[in-house]
View 1 (tube, rainbow, N blue to C red):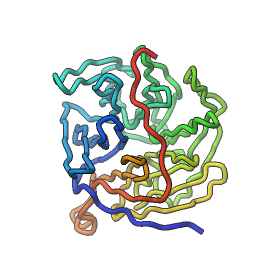
View 2: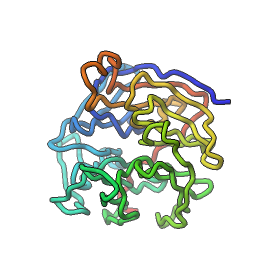
View 3: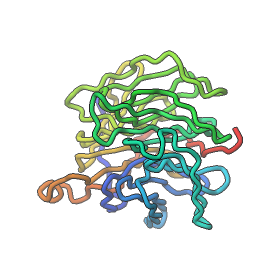
View 4: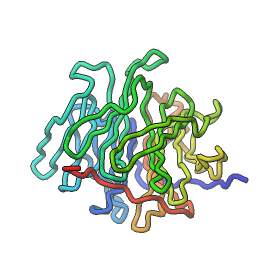
Length: 297
């Protein structure tokens, strides 16, 4: 029997495309982005305040680094950003400066490598985007080619598995993951997504190895057993476009959920007044601690 819970609004941010939440354990903040709004956000759950940093192009993903700054996947490539001096440096543009794609989602693996993938602006079956890995020595590696919409990632470190979503394929795939080298092999289907669930978007994993998947056009986050495909829990969100989720808080027992308001009609927004907001729920399980980007590895 599937357990159902409701998420509560914690920040009425009305983001156009809220995405990429990640708990920064050092700063005790939730890091998240508004891709279309070109913003990196830091949400303080104690004060309820959100600090937004604006850039000159879409921010597909952002992760803290181990030197007090951030590693970014902006529209066209990997960048490092030092907030104190507002210094931004282009690390690499792996698809070139004139790519028709943009970076969409990313996070660090357990060894501090930054994985981020691209998506085609006019997406469809013929789109050719990619999944990349940025190592601590700032070398870039293409990990998966001919992706359509690169999205959620999660690692089960105990079993050496990486899970990955290419949204329009309607499935979650699993790879054997070598923690030392960062290599992935033996791709296979882990979870098939039914048509009536919505589009599988961002994803995280809990301490029991279960996947938490946000469903765009699906009004919810689902906890799914990747071994059986069984839905164990559904977190209902009062917004149609649910984009991603991550565990945070001092005990990593709070699930934060991002949403979007992009392309909603005035009628839709009247029915979903908190579209683009940040939500939270305590589901009764704990997540895994996020690793920052680690230089030099």
